[in-house]
Image 1 (cartoon, rainbow, N blue to C red):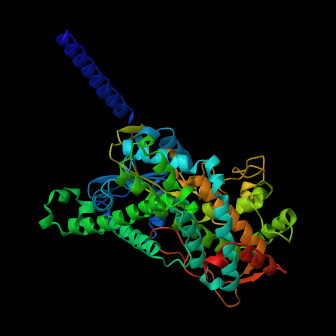
Image 2 (image 1 turned 180 degrees about the vertical axis):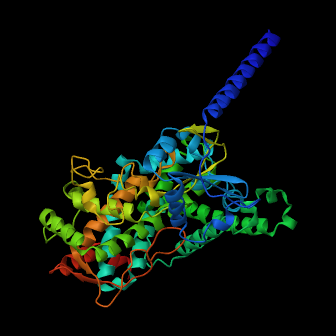
Image 3 (image 1 turned 45 degrees about the vertical axis):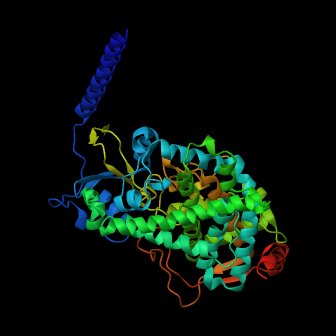
Length: 520
């Protein structure tokens, strides 16, 4: 009997392999044309063509020249740029089972993160388990429970802007950091200089540096991973940095555990508490869970802050749009109370301004790369297994057929029927659900619902409370941004003042909040 079973199983396996080989051969036979792109040099390919900053400009330049799909090569690794929303949806969403992995950056993913950092994980069980935890923590029904925290943090930003608008970068960063630290660990950020915050920003700097393709030879030639540690100082550096970040992440989680045991109410309603209450449901080891929870900061803090900075710049550059936004708020909210979450449905122009900010200046203009896990054919092009997929959000958000006058900040494109992006009813649309600024397919940002509500609330409250305008004699540029990482405008000077007598309402809200007590 056993021999019969073995024969049947063997025949089944052979048949499955034959079908797979036939399918792969069929896919390849449908590929009739090469993917266009720039020619490169032997061995290094297009490495010398890749700029150290503003990569999205180079990608857009290539796509303008070669078309919406562009292939280039770095040291033997194929890369594919996607420059239209249709192609991105066709591949990243409709074929998400093979386009949802991540290229493994040796220094950042394998050595620093020890294959535990969710944003860098390949598509597989560990990633799915971490994603399941994040879904349970950030799905729409749960996201509404975090409104009191968002209310408190937004009031503090208004107070800080009122008294020192020149430090707006610090206030926006602390708003985002404060939200995440409270949501994840129940820790309130008072100064922004607390040890965990400083250590997290140091970790972010290390992650960015170790992720640079040209920063370490091992990122270009992964075969160097085979070197013993005594011949590979980069391994010792990564091991030291891994120990430092794992120590921080584990201490943050264990701190919640200790405070819960002491009955601290702030520790109870946190992301970490949800995991502690039902560890077995997620199939994560403790270190894997530490990375899921500990890296929430790097996923959300910088993006929210950068988006708010771009919003203020847009309002300075397009004062007529700001006047329309303030007028909508005055009509809906009036002048004697701050906007609340309940007002969002009646504020379509506010929501359009937020969405247009993310289109006009996407926070992650080249997205985080994906990796194809098996050969695929699209529109006659063969895309090989292992190809790194670069979705150029900057270019996608400038498709003239989808976004007429793409360089203009134009919230009306989401609100008026003759634009291709218009949807109704306006009580619901525009919104940020499934918006390409948050990624595509199975890798779409899991904290989207929380981020959306945080951006809406702070945008509405700032616009209700303040006049924002250009300062005489100051030259403003819409392209004066930092060259790497997140798309964040360089510091700029602008005029901010309370509208009418609204200083009173900002000060009253601040005094009624928890912040005066915490800062004494």
